[in-house]
Amino acid sequence: MIRRILMKKLHNFPLINDVMVKRLHMSLRKLLKILQDKNTSIQLICNNVKKEIALLYLFKENKIKEITQKPD
Image 1 (tube, rainbow, N blue to C red):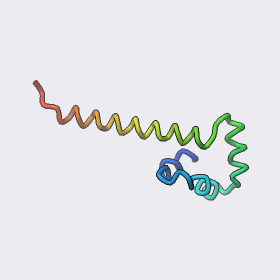
Image 2 (cartoon, one colour):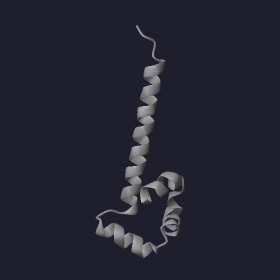
Image 3 (cartoon, one colour):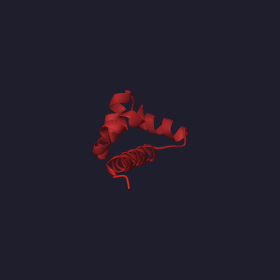
Image 4 (cartoon, one colour):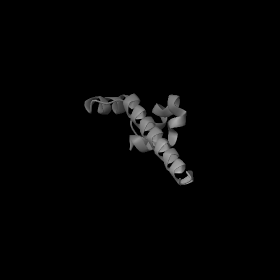
């Protein structure tokens, strides 16, 4: 659920904590405790989402280059 929220609101990162706790219907303290118990954090999840998005863009860009490349 957190990943989905981040994917939609990543551009608004400084406010993402507020958005997440409202969407998850819990306090920030509770969310942070849950994430800590799972050995992760909002920042780590956010970094992973950013990495996935970057990889998707790279893959998409490479596909476009393959399609537009003229055969020899």
